[in-house]
Length: 262
Image 1 (cartoon, rainbow, N blue to C red):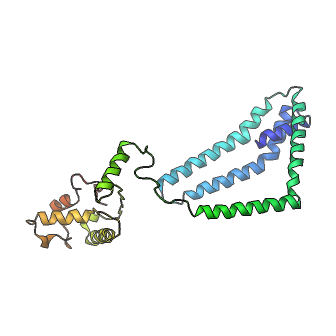
Image 2: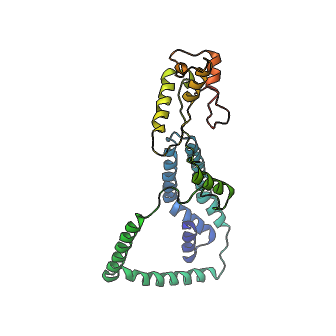
């Protein structure tokens, strides 16, 4: 938009398309480059966030800014240089500028003391109303089921039946534990995950918690005739046979582990 406006001003001054393109390029080169480089620095800074998806977005945005620099500062003036202004173009630009000048002259009346105070008072009232009504803004789910689906969809209807007739919920929160060493063969890490699961079970509203240590303890007890004395996390390094059993998720469970158990 700035380029086109500058070209219109140059055409109004009586310059041809080639001279208008050169004048626009010289006038807007430095401000445009500084603005685009500032955007580029901002996107490159996002690369410091250790999230792969955000880093990919930052790389894509940086490439986009580089393409904008090429098209906006180089290709657009080149295309404008091939545009020929007809005899009536200057008259249309003059009429448009006179109309805009009259419009801005009328709008400038609000800068007077009286209108400005009235605008400030209205803004203050709107701010107070917004702050008051903002306290009523709902946070979280505003309806039962999945909001992306219709209220009468099969999933939402099943969700309503399950939650109304049974003392269970359908919301599942998955916590991912990542470590530099295999979790399923580390007593300290397995104990930490087990303690985390115990704390989460005691949170109000939590129906059930399924963790890898829970299945590990069940599997270890199962390999020892189901004795409750063995239903614990062993401090010694497990054998390869028990490691394969304890690191494999139970059938029907949504819990998954990496093949390296990390």
